[in-house]
Length: 397
Image (cartoon, rainbow, N blue to C red; front, side, top):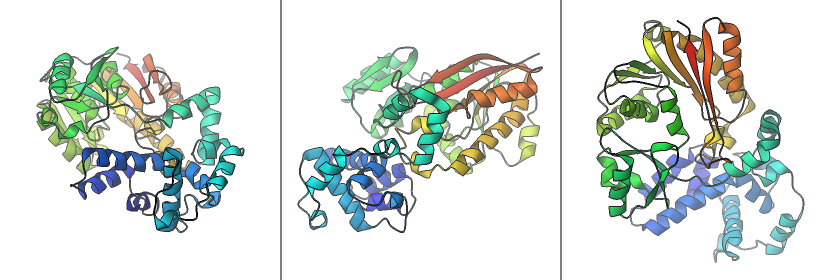
């Protein structure tokens, strides 16, 4: 239960908690490791719902002062009963009455509790996306598939599929994405020899739509202005066949350090790393780029299936801050695009206020200089990919 206490009482990220937990128990077999990881993610995803089924006060489900080891054991006992029909034979689970759980299951509960999201988030999303919100929310509460992107600087997707099969990892091609593979079964492929050789990256299919939308060509100068750890920068390098220049920028050095390691593994030689140290970093690149990718910080609600603790961390105030930041970045970073060049604005959000409304507001201010060429909306309830938005804008010559 230490992992769940780390997430909800100490405020640590669930993916890192799971990773550290597995590292600390090297003698566990693959089945045990998978069971522990899936149990933690399930309980993080359905935390509010299980808190309610355990008979605990709803007002305290995110109160760190009220979250204790005893209560977490109670939640886990209810979870195991729901999974197997039996309570674990442990002292910590004594006294849990299945009749009370059955009563709570049969009574009507508010939709936000039933779907295990905060009330404010349910209301905001319902107001913004309207009648499709229940369908979206159901999909966001499901476990996500694992997708790979073949690094075409080294291998084709079909050859990668064959090599993975030789190592017992079965995968299938993905319609509309020539470099993508979907795993038939969840596995930690980052431990494989093929991954260490840089033959593929783990990257959701929705994310793999973004780099091609930028319409890059070998020899161009491309700026990935919010590169992070560089998944899309590496995709761009492959699409450009290692010709031209990709300037991968971020305000966080640790993310760029990870990008540097990944670029070396992928043999992406045209990726240049650049830390954004202030406004001058951006000003020096004014009118310099043929293409600019602006994958801005966002609520990340579209990837909630992969990071279920997102919904517990996000607040109204943080969402407002992100919207203001997005508008500011779009205004300032777009100036790096040369006349006649193109920019892609992208988020992993499902909210129009972070997506098309941001682009519309930008165009209202810049209509004489910019125009929209194409927009992309991806929803997890349609196609099974993550939720993503992207728009390609042309700066008029």
